[in-house]
Length: 168
Picture 1: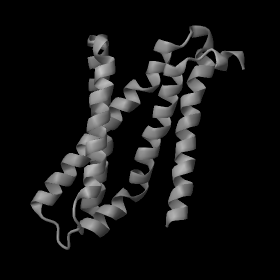
Picture 2 (picture 1 turned 45 degrees about the horizontal axis):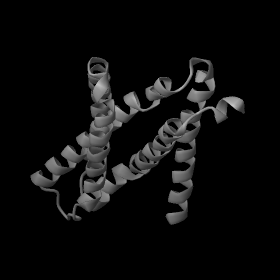
Picture 3 (picture 1 turned 180 degrees about the vertical axis):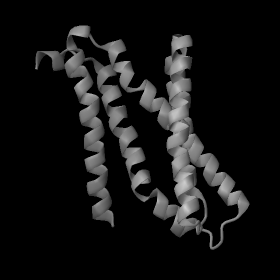
Picture 4 (picture 1 turned 135 degrees about the vertical axis):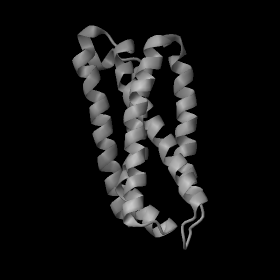
């Protein structure tokens, strides 16, 4: 309990961001394929490939973000602001697109761009957010400090599943 009391506001902000990040991506992962098929009339195969772009771009971007932060550690806070903004734009813009009875090339391109932006920012948060815990906590508290991001991420998955099932 004494270790938990020693964590400052920055640490609890990271824990909150872990929860909010997972709460943003979990619903998309759950309903993304059906949304692309039902709203935009994409075929299941095309929708599956588009959803895969989120995770592929996340994997590729994670390595790039880790390299950039390692090379330029002084820009970490600015990167979080830019990533957060692009993340919100990439994530919400796909929901703002109008429904389509027949998919067009332009719609495919816009959805693919949104998914790639979403994935790149997902990779950034995955590779930058949780490792930031080590920068603001004492080495003696690292075991306890690293347990809370996992708890926050799992709570977000449970919470979004409960809310999603209540809405449906």
